[in-house]
Image 1 (spheres, rainbow, N blue to C red):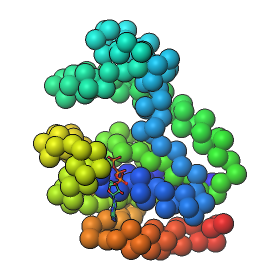
Image 2 (image 1 turned 135 degrees about the vertical axis):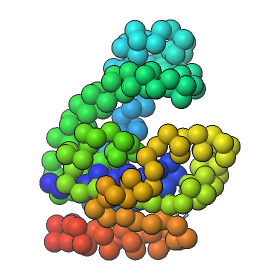
Image 3 (image 1 turned 45 degrees about the horizontal axis):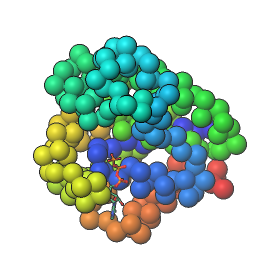
Image 4 (image 1 turned 180 degrees about the vertical axis):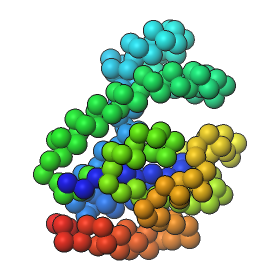
Length: 201
Ligand code: ATP
């Protein structure tokens, strides 16, 4: 089994590239989806989060109040570390579990937005694929896709690793800028041939 770590800044096109890799036979493990499920009502992260941050960050239905939590961690680096201290080990366990279930696949793709920021990921994957785009393009996409303001996107971008840091950690970079979806798909195909080749289904 080959393990590919897929990362990129907000709105770079990670999920789009992940879907194209899945079309070629990869199993996908989405760490954002895992983080969301851990913080749904009854999710495994909710009791430790409530104990750490108080009832303010828990909605009436028992799910994480994301807006409140986002405000807290944007203002307080130590709160961010404490939240990560709860979430990261649980995400790691869920990834191991899902990877064990993907045994039949030759390729497993881990979609990890913060792969470069959280040092422990590099050792868990064989190759790192970075999806890169300019900040203007990142902003434009997220404003259209999610209805965010330019300021809201910028606030996330400055918290994430720089494009340079991400590219420095990459085994391959897809520059998803000025490409149609068909052209992006062709880039993904070329990479799949190079990295997976004979293993392709
Ligand atoms: P996030 O970090 O917010 O999860 P992401 O990196 O996963 O974002 P996507 O959701 O894949 O990014 O892409 C953001 C938006 O841009 C989506 O609506 C997607 O359809 C669109 N998009 C990405 N790449 C292209 C492209 N080459 N051509 C047209 N639209 C694109």
